Figure 1 (cartoon, rainbow, N blue to C red):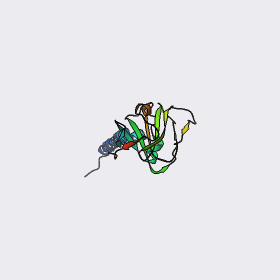
Figure 2 (figure 1 turned 90 degrees about the vertical axis):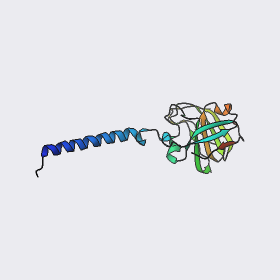
Figure 3 (figure 1 turned 120 degrees about the vertical axis):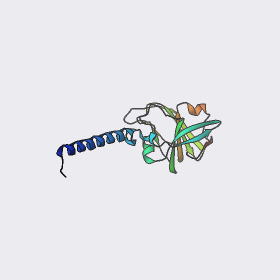
Figure 4 (figure 1 turned 60 degrees about the vertical axis):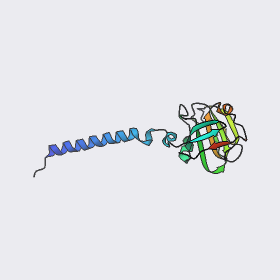
Length: 162
């Protein structure tokens, strides 16, 4: 049986075309084309007083580094950062496009909060340190701390992540 150069070229071109289409589809649907903080899809419920909020959970180093940077909105009721060990974890507003409230938590108790931390495109944006060691930080839309009556000593109940 003979080997047909023309038919072989058609098959090679077809395989290459399918490969290019496959790579293009993968890139358009892959995690590389989406903001890191949106990749988790991990949410939980947070109870503040009588208000039940659905918040995005961020519990990886990469996710914490990205946070809400480069987003146009929070996309849920808030974002909950979880740390493996209590510590003093300062937050900044690098590449933020909107103001937020930052709530510092130790266990389920509020240690303090920043009301309406301003967005910043400065090369060295302001840094907000917690008032003490925290194991969680809750970011909410600006003004939410006042709306929900959050103050130092307030209790916030966090359900197990979904």
